[in-house]
Structures are given as structure tokens and as C-alpha cells.
Amino acid sequence: MKNNIRVERAILRITQQQLAEVIGVSRQTINAIEANRYVPSTVLALKIAKACSKKVEDIFLLEDTD
Image (cartoon, rainbow, N blue to C red; front, side, top):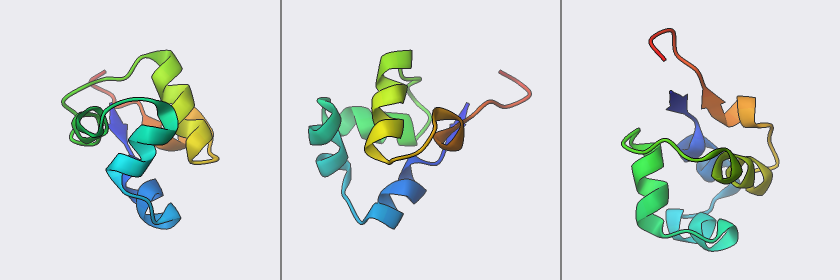
């Protein structure tokens, strides 16, 4: 699964730390998700999408290999 979190953060001009604080996780968690080392739970994915004012489908993209 790919994601556009880094792009959305750039548009909003917020850091990993700022996003992490808004959704209640560590900066390392945001970093791991952006680097595709960690697949977030449904709740976490929804929180990220809400923080970015986007739909989950706009942030997370299912790949053919998933």
C-alpha cells in the first residue's frame, strides 16, 4: 500500500511531529507509515485523512500486489 502523507503534509506545511501531535501518535510512527514500513490501523488511517481534510482513498492507495 502506498500513501501520499508526505505530499499532504507539504501542502499543509506541517511537520511529521505536528501531524503526530494532532492524531496522537509518535513522530516515528508517521515516519514509518510514510516510508511504507508500517501499515496503519483503520482508525489511524481515518485520523490521518481527517487531519489532512481528505478521504482515506485520497491518502492511501492500494497496489495490485496488496
